[in-house]
Structure formats: C-alpha cells, structure tokens
Image (cartoon, rainbow, N blue to C red; front, side):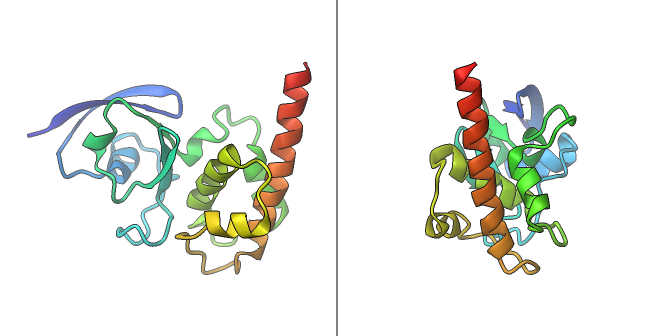
Length: 165
C-alpha cells in the first residue's frame, strides 16, 4: 500500500505516493528525476547519496522516503538553483581540481555545505572529519579538502558583503 507524502526539495513542494520500502534516493532519482544524487554502495558507506534533510546530512540510500514526509530536503541540484551561477562550493571544486570522475562529487559537495553551514571556518582536520564516510577513488582527498577551505572563505566574504548591504 502506497503512502502519500509531501516533501520540499530544493525549495519546491512535491506530493508523492511511495511504497513503504522505497528509499529517499529512489524517490529523488526516479520520481523527481533529480539524478545528481548518486547511488553508490546502497549501504551508507560511500557517501555518494548524501543529502540534507532538515539540516542533517543523511544517506539517502538508507533513508526511507516515508520518513521525510513534511520535511525539507536539499540535493546537489539545490546548490545553484537558478543555473545561472555556480555555488561557491561548486566553483571551488572546479578551481582546485577536486572533480575527477565526478561520481562522489555531489555527496562531497552536500557534505561540504553541511559542514560550512555549521562551521564556516573549519580547520583541515575538521574538514577531513566532515568528509568521513565519503569515498573518493580518484582525487586522494587533498583537492577536496582544499576546495572546501576555499569555498568556506568565499562563502564568508559573500555573506559579510550581504550583511553590510
């Protein structure tokens, strides 16, 4: 028996009828066609499917869609919703070469958003801790850590300028 849920994804409200065993990852990718959130391992070990649900970073492959009824979800598509400009995190990932094959990138960028939202000036150790549970087979993590540091600096400048206006 399907369950009717309402969720806000990247600022847009959706009503879905989902099976009780359907994951949030499946609902995002298959029902809403938001394919930026990847499915890597399916067991919550790789981080490729990370999204933010009501301010918490979660593995969408382990989260049942019915459990997000009435909640707000941010996916990688929500980083630059207009499509006109990249988010500072996305810009930093490109600038530092943190994107190789790209499979882990969406989960890493969402983890970076979560980290920087809670800690705008993380140390290298805090960044590495914030990335724990995220696997990348291409970059060796140094470029990703650098990207998050660069993005944090840019986001601080951006927010300071907005506050002064």
